Image (cartoon, rainbow over the protein chains, first blue to last red):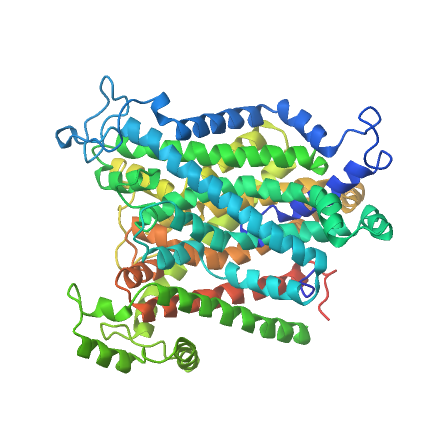
Amino acid sequence: MPEQPPYEPEGAVAGTGMGGAMDLAASEASTLQRAPGGPVGTGPAGRPRSLWSDALRDLCRNPVFIISGLVILFLVVISIRPSLITSGNPLTCELSKALEGSQPGHPFGFDGQGCDVYTRTVYGARTSVTVGVCATLGVALLGSVLGGLAGFFGGGWDSILSRLTDVFFAIPVVLGGLVLLSVVTSNTVWPVVGFIVLLGWPQICRIARGSVISAKQHDYVQAARALGASNSRILLRHIAPNAVAPVIVVATIALGTYIALEATLSYLGVGLKPPSVSWGIDISAASPYIRNAPHALLWPAGALAITVLAFIMLGDAVRDALDPKLR
Amino acid sequence: MGRYVARRLLQMIPVFVGATLLIFLMVNVMGDPIAGLCGERSCDPATAAQLRREFGLDKPLWQQYATYMGNVFTGDFGTAFNGQKVTELMATAFPVTIRLTVVAILFEIVIGIVLGVVTGLRRGRPVDTGVLLLTLVVISVPTFVTGLLLQLLLGVQWDWIRPSVSPDATFGELIVPGLVLASVSLAYVTRLTRTTIAENKRSDYVRTALAKGLPRRRVITRHLLRNSLIPVVTFIGTDIGALMGGAIVTERIFNIHGVGYQLYQGILRHNTQTVVGFVTVLVLVFLVANLLVDLLYAVLDPRIRYA
């Protein structure tokens, strides 16, 4: 976007508000990785510590990273094997127990249909983690490939893609979800994942594009070109490793927001629909009883908040580790 | 400056066409609009065909789009299937949502920037850590949960506000819904201001200003803040469109009859005219807000010149 004033941080438009730091992270990353030592591939002993091992060392000492990492690990484990911590079935409900409070064997009480809130909250993790991980993988793959190619080759394809991302940014996300998903009758997570990928890729695309543009101006890229390396080799061996850091950071934070988006869409009645188990559905179902049975709302809402928080904190910690300028 | 504005206006055209076309396509995927007209029963084929002709739905899609856009630019947003003019719906809905958005933006500007400046100047102190943690919590709790909880606490338990907003939707009633709508962006504004303030605090011009013996207050407001506000202004500007579009959740929780409410009804009833009309206006708002932000740069930062 050559017409834009020079001080605009690219990512701010995408709603993360951290774009400025991203590009810096990219340029810093490349100087850090290559500048101090000789050519890449000196033996392990003579090799300078790379940005990545530096960041890893930093992360292992960061309590925020460790805590959020443990929370995420726990979530992933229980979404693969919910039966590890609950023996109940989220779909067996006894209407006679509707809205009852906590009792032995049912620590979180019952919801409006008499389902065990604890079991449903545990099983809800699977939906959220699946949607978050699949949507992020899709968005990151599509966005970074399109953005990377556009940034590397430039030209007409690049301007078309930039305008296309502008178009997608102009459409309010929740609204698009309501329109597109209101016709879907399938009761799996895939329509929601597909929708998030469809509207989410421009964000990563912009970041990847900016980061590739700043990486390709470095001397080592010129050197590789002078040595006769092909475009694909330059892209994969030289640019990709140096441009991927901002994409990873934004994708991690986005994962959390995608989980929140899935819950919001389910709350509005267009994401997943019952009998699927999702925190959004449970919160929506519990909101009429908020006055006499707030527990049915608070547990899934709390689980949702902690999950989103864990991913955002993880992304924050990774960014701090990869962005030496902020230290 | 004039040439820059003209160029930006020209650039807006493809984005506007693209976004409205995308919405047009999406709404068309949304299902047969005629099906929504006959209520629960399915239409009998003859009536359906006649209705199709009447609404121009038998024409190819691009032609429908062209006709529609032609009408929009003469101020005709079409008629909802219940016979009400879409412009009439807009006239009742937009003032409410604009009031809500104004409240939200004010919260972002006042609370967000003040918190950002305070924490940015005291980086690493307890205030900073506390506010930073708070923003993280606010960002991670989805808006609909924040809204439901505030409604429960303030509206039901403590009885400070009325749980649902009256059809008039005065500014006073919209304070809590506005705060809910602003909450996530508010946290982003705080973090963004904090980062830029902390970065610029170490810059040479701040040191120079302090060395000249300017009072600290003046250095912060005239030198530091003015330079740090640029990314914040970008964020708030682009957020206007997002807030108006995202108001759908807040409006549903507090039963506010604004744009989000009308859109939700339109989508539920497959009322294509309403949905496309409202979204078209929202896209326009988004684009104009972005343009204004770009022009504001020159005011905030004299180093930027538009050729």
